[in-house]
Amino acid sequence: MRTEIDPGKPAARPGATGVRLRARGLGLACLGAVMMLVSGCRLDMHLQPKYLPYEPSEFFADGRSERQPVPGTVARGHLRIDELLYTGRENGVEADRFPFPITRADLQRGQQRYNIYCAPCHDYSGSGRGMIVQRGFPQPPSYHVPRLRQASVGHFVQVMTNGFGAMYSYAARVEPADRWRIAAYIRALQLSQNASLQDVPEAERAKLTQAPAHESSPEGAKQAAGESR
Amino acid sequence: MAQIFHRSMNLLSRVSIYGAILVVGALGYALYALALSPWYTEQTMVRPQPVPFSHRHHAGELGIDCRYCHSSVEKSSFAGLPPTQTCMTCHSQIWTNAAMLEPVRASYRDDTSLAWTRVNALPDFVYFDHSIHVSKGIGCTTCHGKIADMALTYRAGTLYMSWCLECHRQPEKYVRPKSEVFNAFYEPPSNQIESGKKLVKEYDIQSLQHCSVCHR
Image (cartoon, rainbow over all chains, first blue to last red; front, side):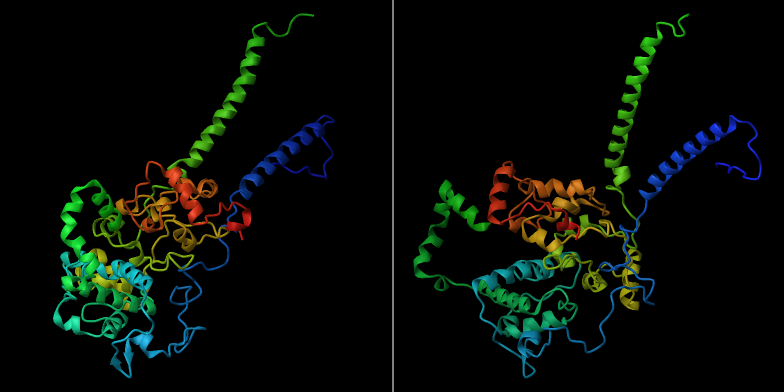
C-alpha cells in the first residue's frame, strides 16, 4: 500500500517529491481500477429488498414470505355464496344441472383440463387405467359403469372439489368453472363409449360405413389426419 | 552521434505494437467466450435439491402435462412451484416408503416448505411474465430446453439480455402453434420462419424491445 508523506519531516532530497508524485499518481490509477472492478460486483439491484413469489424469509418464524390470510378472509370478488357453482350441491344435495350453459368452447376447455389433471389416472377415455394407475396407483372406477353413468354432474364436481377415497382434492389446481366443464366432458366421454348408430345424425351415418373406403384414398387419409389433430 | 538502436529494433518495435493489439484482442475474445461458456453462465449446472426430482420421469416417461404441477403458468407471471399436496396426490399411494421422498412426506406432515434451489432465476430488476409468453405461442421447451429429458433439472438458456432479445427481435424463429405450447417433445417444422411469420401475424405478436418492457 502507498505510504503517506509525513508532514513533520522535511523532504529528504529535492528529487524525491517528483518520485512521490508519480507514485501517488500510480496509486490513484490502481485505486480507480480496483473501484471500477469492485463496483461491477455490486448486487444490490440484482437482489432487491423485496420478496418474489415463494422467496424464503428470515423475518417470519416459519421461513415463508407468503403469508396465510387470517381465517375467514374473503378476497375481493371471491365471496363464494353460489352453492351450486362452488360445491356442486343444491340445498346439500348433489345437483344434476350446470350453473351455466355448456357451449362447444366449454366442452373443449373441459377436454383440455381433463387431459391435464384427470387423464394421468382416469385415462384419456375415462377407463380408469391411466399411466399413474399402471404404475401402481389404486385403480379408480371407470366412468362407464352404471353407477357413474347415472351419477349427477354435481357429484363429479363435488369429488373434484373435495377429493374422494385415494383421490386428493383438485380445488387448488382446477378453478370452479373448469370443474363443471370437466364434468361436462366426462358426460361426453360417457356418451362416446355407449353410443349407437341411432345417435349419429342420419346424414352422417353413411360416412361411418364408408370409412374404410375413404381411408384407402389419399384424400380421405389427409382428411382423417386433419381431423385427428 | 552513434545509433542507439540497432536496425533490427525496427522489426521488434512493429512486432511488439501489433503483438500487443493481438494479445489484447485475444484476451477480449477469451473473456467473451468465457462469459458465454456454461462454466460461467452455469447453464448445465445441476444444483443440490432436497429431492432429486426428475422431469425426465414425470414429464417425459409418464407424460404428465407441465400444468399438472405448474398450474399458474397460464394466468400468472409465476409458473408456480407445486405445493407439497400436488406431490402427495400420487405419492401418498405410490413410492410411499422411498427414502428419497422423505423430505416430501415430512413437508406434508409438518406443514413446512420444501426449500427447492431455484434453477432459472432472473435478476430482481427484470420483470418477466410466463402467462403472456405461453398464451402467444412460446413453448415451455423454447426457454427451458429439453426439460422432458432432464433427469436432474438444469438451466438451458444463458438468461442473458441478449438471449431474451434474440427472440424478441425475431419471434418468428421460435413461435409455435398454441396447441403445441405444452408439448414437451415439439420439434419445429422445416419451414419454421415461414410458418412462424404467419403465426406472428395471427397471434398479433409484438416484437417488443424497449427498455421498460422488462425493466419496469
